[in-house]
Image (cartoon, rainbow, N blue to C red; front, side, top):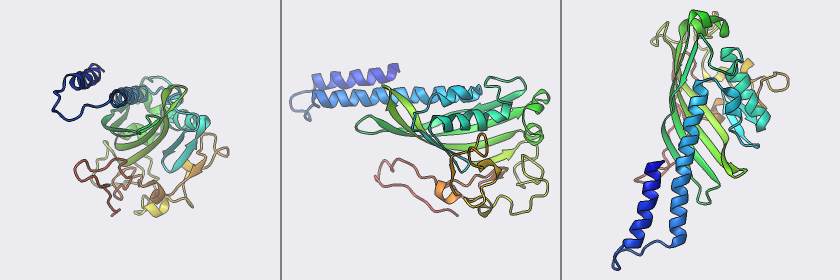
Length: 280
């Protein structure tokens, strides 16, 4: 915060003290816009770091409170809409890991570190986009085994996750209008990462065949029990999408079944071109 305010003050001071033969100084309106963008960036960076702490502490109801009224969130090929959908995703889906306690729970550790934030604010300062990544760790002690499935508790897991987020101003403040959670690699500590997926480990059925996690088994036509729609499922999504539509192939108990194609919202800073790649 202090650094951002210092930068804003430096911009203003530099403009006022620039020599007459220097490049034309920005107008008062341009300076106001620059300072506003810096302030917005600082506020959004703080916003998402708070998000990370609340996720670490399993405060899922508080997470749902961060979202806008018309939010649309994407998680594991499910699409959750509005305030009701936000609550179903955080309280219903994430809360299930710890018995819906909505608090730090003895016997469970779920760290959700936030890093590498790239925040892009629209010129009108009413919307913004951001990309973050997290290396999430999930562990359960023997005491915590009853809080989740036996496979999750025994194994422990490490996840590599991308966030592609949208924000908007609502009620005079920034709110989260959309998250795209891309879990593109996940592996179990207990059984290792080399020969995955392993039937019977980390939620993989004991009778799973070698093609269990191939993308054709997780499409819109066959979304799996995670994506039975609401209200048939109490915490289900409002709609589902295929991995191809989402751009992220959820690779549970595996290291990148397919490459992720969830595109960057930003361009290469030197060439100015969009950076894209194909799934292989």
